[in-house]
Amino acid sequence: MTDAADLTAAELLEAYRAKALSPVEAAAAVLARIDRDDPELNAFCLVDPDTTMEMARASAERWRRGETLGALDGVPVSIKDVLLTRGWPTLRGSTTIDPAGPWTEDSPAVARLRERGAVFAGKTTTPEFAWKGVTDNPLTGVTRNPWDASRTPGGSSGGAAAAVAAGMAPLALGTDGGGSVRIPAAFTGTFTIKPTYGRIPHYPASPFGTLAHTGPMTNTVADAELLLDAVCGADARDWSALAPPAAPFTGGGPDDLTGLRVAFSPDLGFARVDPEVAAAVAAAAEAFTELGAKVEQADPGFADPVADFEVLWFAGAAKVVEHLTAGQRARLDPGLREICEQGARYTAVEYLAATARRMELGRLMGLFHERYDLLLTPTMPIAAFEAGLEAPPGSPSPRWTSWTPFTYPFNMTQQPAASLPCGFTADGLPIGLQVVGARHADALVMAACRGYERARPWKRLTRT
Image (cartoon, rainbow, N blue to C red; front, side):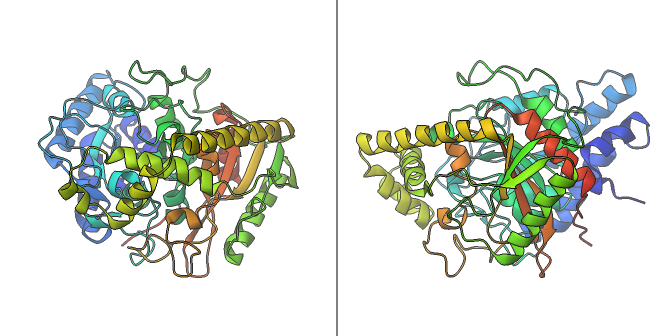
């Protein structure tokens, strides 16, 4: 018999409708999986079985009465511990935040899930203040990859990705300021999309400004569509939130992708890519041709914008910690403390110059998408490396930005960018394909990913 913890959200909902399974059974299965696997993986920083089961029992009663609250009623979901969650502390991986709160408010996406009857499985780990592309912090330690516990799951939504991959909740909410849902999705063989900025409302406003997005993390495209439909739309607390999408994500878009104009860039013109990754991504691009797309190799034509991204990111980090005392700063992750000191030294003119170059990058990509509907790249140039390191041995810089060249450019341009599994290394580690669309073309990106998933279904992790 299939363990309910291994079912997708769509499969759970089908089982609820058929009265073959209840939300109580699903929640109990997820909590049992957390008990079994999380001591090794450290994906969760907060688990509250009483609250989880209370939410599940309320959902089961709604299903019994035929009065469900929405398409995710009774489905377990984890929440990255940078998103406010009423009744639970949001500590952001830091010893500098008082757990006592008060914790009286939900972030917009969390509020929408609560309103629609989702069952909260717990809060997932993040590097301190979500500052880097791996997941370890002074508060809860090192989070590990379910495919190989000696490796990192990536970050900063590493706990969310590990939870999804290991069956500790089929849905997760993550955030992405420079790759933070796509990096761990690629490293853990899961699916994600960083939607167009504002597609999912965000509150409180991120100190990293308009680089930061909220995104769904799932095992399948269909589950991500369900989650997007639940959390997209305006929220009065986010002045930059977009209006709801014109149509639901679920069930839309073509499967054959006939006539779609697709650019495939193996390296964006400047990145170094591991040969195993390059081969898997090239094969995935060929699959788009088989689905009817017109694929040609083309680079967008920009140089690595890492220096400008770091000005924006490091200045944001300095803003995060500006209120801390000297004693609190001494307890920060040493790498975070270093970039905060660097970020505090930038002048307003330097920040505005980086912003101007960011806007130029956005203009260039806007013109690029007049010629191409989608851009395909590797999500990551490498597979998952040793857990507990910010950068792999031999990296040209100690910073996480030295090995994530495909992700942060599209935070700067605010475009939708998805990551989906497209193969494995010889060591059995997942490889990710990135699918990038023009701003507001979220539905097209999701349709392309759905078509690829149906043509090339990927192997999910089975942990015993």
